[in-house]
Amino acid sequence: MIKKVQLPLQTLNLVVGFMVWVIISALLPFIIEDISIPADKLAILTAIPVVLGSILRIPLGYYANLFGARVVFLISFILLLFPVYYISEASSFTDLVIGGLFLGIGGAVFSVGVTSLPKYYAKEKHGFVNGIYGAGNIGTAITTFAAPVIATQIGWSMTVKLYLLLLLIFAALNIFFGDRKEVKVKTPLMEQIKGVYKNEKLWFFSLFYFITFGSFVAFTVYLPNFLVDYFQLDKVDAGMRTAGFIAVATFLRPVGGWLADKFQPLFLLMGVFVTYTVAAIILAFSPSIGLYTIGCMAIAVSAGIGNGVIFKLVPFYFNKQAGTVNGIVSMVGGLGGFFPPLLLASIYSLTGQYSIGFMLLSQVALASLVIVVWLYYMDRLSLSADVFNSTGQGIIVTDSTGQIKAVNPAFTLLTGYEETEVLQQNPRLLSSGRHNKEFYQQMWSLIKERGEWQGEIWNRRKNGEEYLQWLNISAVKDDTGEDIRYVGTFTDITEEHEKRKHI
Image (cartoon, rainbow, N blue to C red; front, top):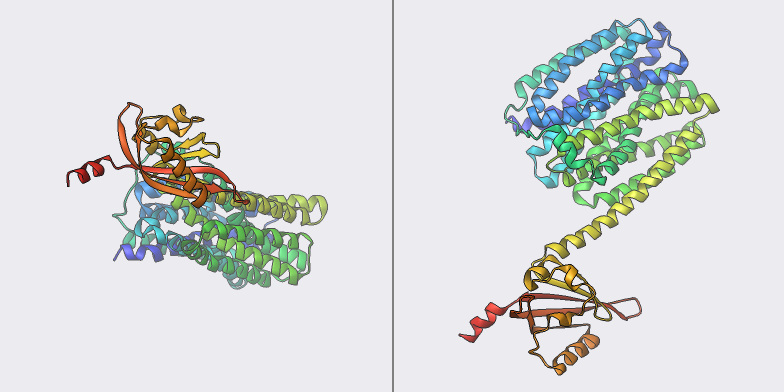
């Protein structure tokens, strides 16, 4: 029973964490009526919670493996009580910065669920499960939509205090319904980091999440104020439009995870970054509110599907280090939400427009598309190499002149020759001398005519021992039909031959 409630419980935990995480950005139009904040400091204030919310994702992902999600969520919600209360009593810009920094704990809990939940499900469901959990970022939409509405009735300070009650309720739910028996992983943190930091896929996935989740967070914290200032919308209308952006991205996250379970995830990412590139170019031309809405919705769709796909890829490639890798990838994604608002604000102060910032997004998305295509083809080459190296049959590859270009480990096991000893040699090196010249002429005549030959042949190992092979030779042709290489696969059938002799 307890195991079955982990997905809904942890998803709701994430909803609450993200609701708390964006309190300041959602209520900023109300806060600035009471607290004087310089215009050039607004972007810093909205970005501050993202800092700790990003950096803490590595240790929280690790501790989720070490102590279990129940303990980490419980402690996180208790710790969040202090900055939430402090912000509700804030009277200066400094108060908001201090409280906002520690609000980051609410965003950091993301790495807890993506580390914990895959333990409860089969690998082929990890994309969908992490997608469902990731949909907990709807919490940002709830706060962005509801907090301004409530603040118009009871004021922003009392609205913030309501979150104290919410945190206490969920701390209690984790005490009673959290899984005390969750499987723990106790590999030291630095040992896990050392095991993954040289893997380029870690940094590529981090870049992809930097764009997809980073743009989600950036638009979440930047849209409410931007829509009010640039398009002169009222505060509630801006909040509702931002909530719509968040809702679309959030709903499509589990869809992205489900699609990644069913189809090639890298193909899906190619589509994501193509859409990003086009949408960012549209936004770069500072269009009307209609085109701006289309561009933002395209970003929301890409962010949602992309976020779901990436957290299918992480446990697939880093099963044993999922906690640490989830933490690193989600940390970089969180930082992706910190820098764009600051960058956009700086560009706007220098140029009076946001076009350059959106063009930068389109270029980074285009570069990511190129990397995804490269990863896809590297994966195919890696698959071929894995098959070549792991098959139990000996494999020998020659060029059209008969010079050996490659052999696999099974070749060495069966013949005794290391690869370095046979490269650039002719396969006649293996000849036993039992077969006459006509035998080989007939063999090559059939290869030229049919493109392949198979049959029994006696060969000699490095130690001089003769053995019987079942050999298959296939010709590899170019587009003009010319033989460019030959691939031979063979197995040792000496024992079967001896058994046949005694029947």
